Image (cartoon, rainbow, N blue to C red):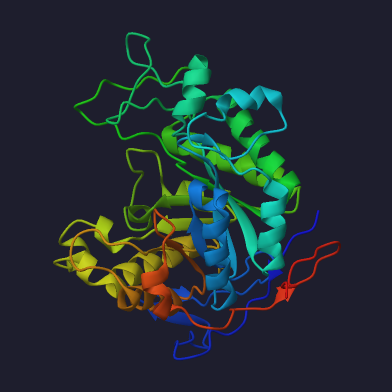
Length: 385
């Protein structure tokens, strides 16, 4: 199948490039200088598109205009979220998991053709295990309570069981179908278990034979194996804290287990999500550069110990929204981007839950990080008149 690849180039502008020495000093200590691999690990600078943006011709037109005039070279598009599938699946068995109240993309191929025509990489975001629609349609897939009834989170939503091979097979089949429609990368979100709050009933996982971190890692290994055979990357979103917490989180995410199992990890290093005092910073939300730099430095150091030195194996999510004080704007976006560059990574994806980025546009550069490459049979790289 045709895939758009982005060739990595120097950062340019005022960004500071890593040293030419074999090792560099970071906040997490001395680490090997990252090795560039533009084919397997292209430099991606993307925008997140929620399901409603992907369904709206007006919204898409505006987002394409942003990408056409900036460094943005990829769209991360919701194709399966907490509301179910955002497209009409070919497999009729999956139709019951599509959801009914939030619409869907009418023509996925046309959407992807448009994305590629603008020289952008189409990335499908798939919410894996927080899937109340599939849970309702397939009660055997759910996390249970001790009395055998379906467990629900604080939002009264059921989750599917991340230990279930049937759930794995369903998610992988959706991913493979989306690759067949033209997506060049699959990005897994909610690769985790729900928080085991003490105020909620205990969680029971029928059929569990592995620990939580092992189950998540085994799913990602299988996903990478199957998707790599199709010529696409398998990437995964994780909590930002996973980069610095030295053991597994209660939700099962553990750097040393997940990093070797994914082509790229995308830590959500949103400064607003760190408790006051993290890293010795009184208000992390007010110091986005330092928060992101420490998190990514630590990720690099941990990857090196695992023998992973590819330059773009880590692609951070950066905060393009306001949560508390200060209000976020271009200054905070620039600080997060610079932190990623100074940590040795050149890519990132901006997250705004409403896919509204206008206030942040002054933080975007005008040139792409690399040039589109036309792969056999691909029409990517050519922009419409």
